[in-house]
Length: 383
Image (cartoon, rainbow, N blue to C red; front, side, top):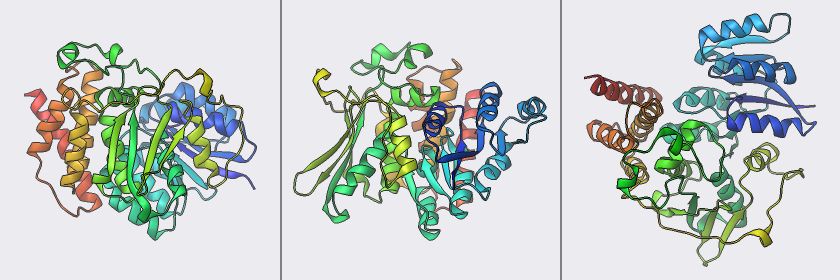
């Protein structure tokens, strides 16, 4: 029996690499694929993998794709309803959630309620509603296996000890394209400069988050819920080479580090095969060729987004959802050349200071806070 796979965000960086992994194995069947609006690529994927369902978030583009796929036994849907449909089909065993942003929350929750295993690459799901999501996963006996290289590294390193033996989790950060720069150097950086990540090939939003260090801040919040560990036991260090993907320090002083080349297909494969490991033809790490492994303290004066993330999770309640929403809007504005790079953390900080936090929020509280933050920024920007 083939293992049924749904990929939310199949045309993005994680989604396309997930399909590479699936293509290299005879154990999987692609059941559903989704995209925001890249209908050219998802059409190619649909013709190659023959899923039951393809979803395009954009309604007009979904109509175009439906016409293109006439004559094939492939259903085409759209919108959030389509995303949910893409994860609840009966013959789906694993859902790879690799969409970008808050949009991944509701379909992930629906997949959990249906008992699907989650290969999680959408960090915003846990950033905004981590307590609710992890509670539902526990209630439905659903495994959430991280795909992000840092969380996959910690997930694997935690197999070396018991929970009460953990001293701290150490998330590594590349430092992004502007590592070592002073604040004045970043005053007039261009979008194309911010998109030049030194080690990883990622989508635009994630690459900008790496440049501001917000990506690492979101990962800190995700790790708090994913591994059920206090925030004061999660540390971030800059490791420019991206060879050590993250580490776990135990109470006896032992540190278990996960090393590997910067290739997301490795953690994707592990998320699909866990708890087993299988071989592959991917490049292996060559220690002899390594020139150095270096480490630095994050410069939060130049890159304050990391501290903003710690502040948001320490406040708790709806504040992480506001942090995330403000960041999504600010990054989009920067990518559209509407604001400067250094205005991203300013917008996030100002939005957080205006938010009245709701403690112990319901899902509706979180969704409402997300909408409030987006509206708040846009209303002030337009005035």
